[in-house]
Amino acid sequence: MEHLGPHHADSADGTAAQGTARKKRSPLRLPAGILAAVLAVAGVGSLAALLLEALRGEEVWPGFAAGAFYCLPLAFLMMAGLVIDSIVRRRRG
Image (cartoon, rainbow, N blue to C red; front, side, top):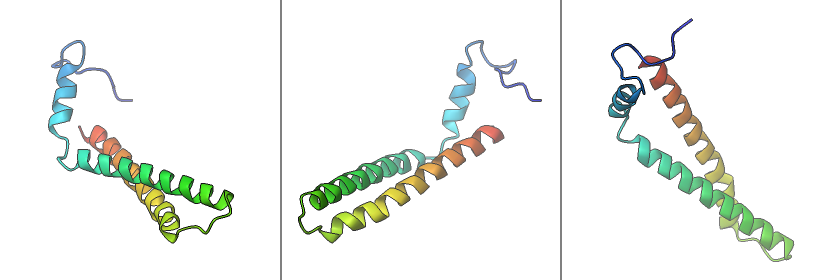
């Protein structure tokens, strides 16, 4: 079983381990996370608008359906990819 605590070369609070992990981070990771969050918010907003229009008995604009149908799964896949990338980077480093 591996030792998961700070290494001997690191300081007691583990700041050196965090500093090296941040240097290895991809420059596309932050924009991908922001894009995934924006897509998730847009998808939830589209779904809410779709449900509100349907409850009021009005005709539903197809753009709301498309927004909910495409944005939510895409945001989920992007966030899952970011989590998997984070796990892979931790195990390597």
